[in-house]
Length: 198
Image (cartoon, rainbow, N blue to C red; front, side):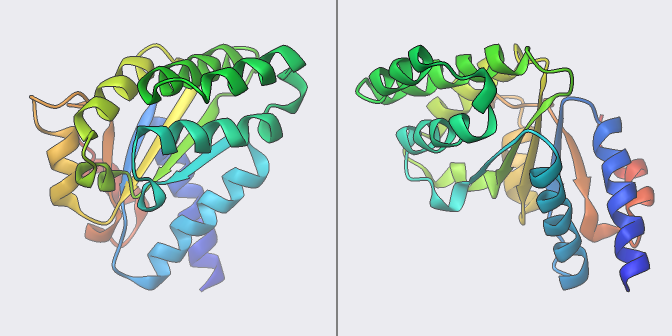
């Protein structure tokens, strides 16, 4: 079991890096594969500069900005000066779209100071569809995404229908902006590469 898990972790890592700036992982209903995804996430979190948001805990745009800003000082400690902390404290008092816009700007600026990309792991991202300001959130995040060359986005979801509603609908901001890795349709992650959308 562990050898299989280790192999999948390595293959998943290769697949995600092959996919470029962004990947959507559609969770498997199989417990073993789901745990492998969680293990991969935890390994990235311990070894890379990684930000994490579970969209099941997000209620609005302000929540996203607040969750990111709370992680900044811990993850980018060496890059953060007192002036940046004061700037973030000011942004917190502003309108939520302004707050998120500025927080994503800081992510771009800080990521460019590192050799390795920063990872933004967005767990259960398709939950954004249930939010009242879903379209505004996706528009704003997509606008920054295309300008953040040193940030790797990893989206997860357990619904291929919702993934298609966000990433395969030409009228949506994230249309064709990420490769979709459907882990539940394959027995090995290496086979998934053939099913990845381009």
